[in-house]
Image (cartoon, rainbow, N blue to C red; front, side, top):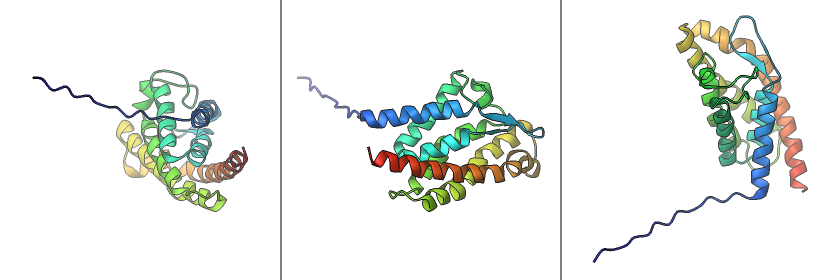
Length: 188
C-alpha cells in the first residue's frame, strides 16, 4: 500500500495597503532615476534615485523594502529603462556601477531594520547616513575596481569621494520625507 503525502505550501499574503505602498515606492524609484547627471571623471551618475531608495527603506518594513528594491533591480535587469540615465539591461549590472545595483536591496533592508518602529527624524537620519551611505559605496567600489581594473585609491576617487557630500544631503532629505510620509500614513 502506497502512502500519500500532501505538502501544504504556506502562501505569503500581502494586504492591499502593503502592495499599494510597494507599488508607489517602486514607481518613485523608477521615476527618480531619470533625474540624474554625469560627473566627468567617473562612470557613476549623481541621481535622485538614492533619495527614493532611502525613502522606500524608511516607509516600508524590512521584508517589503527588500522585495521592492529587488523588484526595481529586476525590472532594470530585464531591460526596462529604469536605471539612472534611462538605462536598463544586464550590461548595466555587469558594468563599473553594477555593484551599486546588487548592493541596494541589502543596504535598504539594513536601513529599514535600523530605522526602528518609532517615527523619528534623528533615527531615520542616523540609519540613512551612518549605514545607508557608506554601505552603498561598498558594492560600487568593488565593481568599479574589478571592471575598470583600478586600485583602491583610484576606485575611491571614482566611486566614493565625489559623492559623499551630496549623498549625505540626499539621506537627510530622505529622512525628512520618510517622517512626513509615515506621519501621513499613520493618520489614514
